Length: 49
Length: 156
Image (cartoon, rainbow over all chains, first blue to last red; front, top):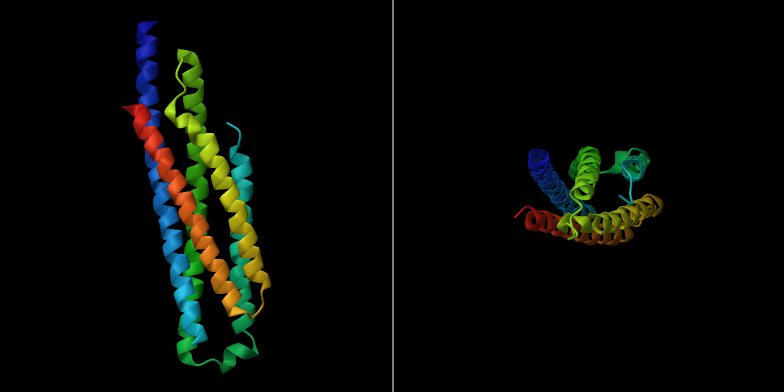
């Protein structure tokens, strides 16, 4: 039973790490979208000059 | 979990659709007679706008896949939490709330992109809508940062 619990804890920690990595990737992708939207605004402003 | 992967998938499909509409808007605007009258410098600018929009679209596809994984893992964690029958509420439990905010942001994003597709030739409106999108994306990034913080706190 104790072994089971220990294994479960290990699994949980593993999942938490993966989840953390995934969310970090999402944040990076979001930042990329912001950067690109800002570039589009810049280009649109160039277009209207 | 309150939100299922399929709901998010639907949202992202909508978002991608809206982005396609933005591209179509630029195509219809500049690949017509108007396009022929543009100077080469303008054509270069429009090409860069296409490129950026396409990159955003591919970015969203990536996000959709990652989000599906995030939901699966969150579900696993929730089941484990029940197995342990722990008294404390795990720090990552805030995630449904963050996901709700994220969803609201995505809906806002889709709405605004749709509007961008409908504004016609009014460039000022497009720029103002784009600025709103950036604010919304920044908020979403901030919320995801909160989620990372919660996960880190929990794994200590």
